[in-house]
Image (tube, rainbow, N blue to C red; front, side, top):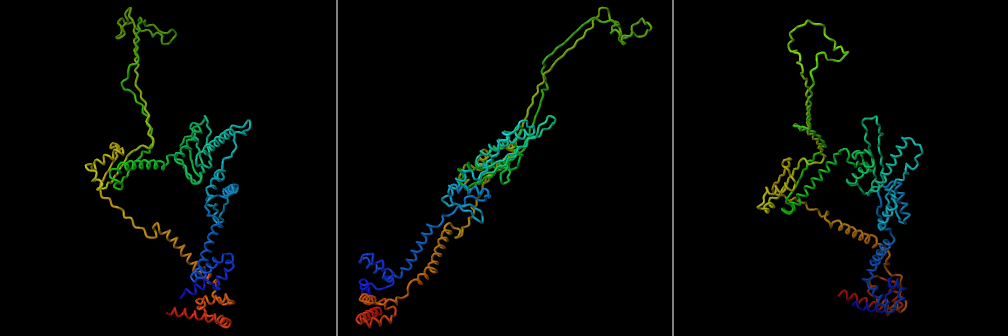
Length: 538
């Protein structure tokens, strides 16, 4: 029953709004192509889908235009810049022809995502974010006949300048200031004050100095100043953090202890991993370091000496009479006269005639051994090591016939434990409990966030289509074709060819006009309408 309207529609198109709107385009096509397009667009399903297709095409065209005309995504170039640095960066970007934006709220400098790394290389190459030392050489303008104080200060400034230029060559250092405190030496002062130095370093953004680099800076400064010890050099960065380790600071000892413990744990892990497997053991190590700095000097002598030389002297001479002496001396005054006693006094016998006086002396020198020893112990020596190992009992059964004693000896040998030093090694076997890992909620899964983003985007598109596009299409689509009046043979044939469309809407004025002007066509159309209604009712 529906083939008759379709055939008639193919022969003579109905004067619909779509055909009237696109009538100007049919003239540029061939007659056959125009007829097929009219037939396709005149179908009810196609006409109902035309608004949705037009809305989809409009949205696609708008999205393409937005992607083509909108600005590319912006990326932050640098953060936390001062006004001077921001101005230098802006000047460098303008000179390179790179567009940028400065946020009025935060002051961040942003560039297009495609120009990010090119902008960073441009700013880094021309030194916009560095402040090089441009101090002139203080020794170049020293006046003739300068005083000793001025000459000393000039030499100190020149030494500071050379140290700054040297330290700036270290990777990661943007700017540096060096201050030397060099007391004046005097021969009238018994205790001389040692010099000291302070170094202020400004690092590049995102960079930091390693402990080896910090020690290198301190060694450079100490080596350039006579009498300056390394411990007297203080190094700080732009954040106010003290980087140097001088003065026996505690963090240096803690870092060394942590490094030794980590090395010991790594050795034990590499030892036990092939034996019991991963997750079947746990190792903890404690290394106690000796932080004392002592110096001992010892001097010892040999108790039994060795004869080095020996000499003996003997002399003999005739006995002198009693009146001998030095002339003129009071000691030579003769004693007063005494009574003559024929008997000699006891113990004072007169020397016999021809007697001799003898004198003997002997000298012996001994060589005594002398030993001097100086012993010095620096901080960082190992005072004691404690190692604790926990093994899984199930994994330990696989090591049979080896047991806990053999594992303990193996761990002690790997750790370098010395019982005489007081080192302890403890190995215990037990049951390991597996930790319960709670299952993550669905919104914490890896697929939850992308799914929610896509769902939100789909809901947003549907809301736009239902609340914006659909009412707009309904408002722009004509509701009826009351203004279209058939005139001429084509209009009569069109009315006769589309009884199904005209039967849906009541057209009293059109029916009366058609019946009065073309009764045959009106009768034929009424017959077709009744026939179609009867077929639907059946």
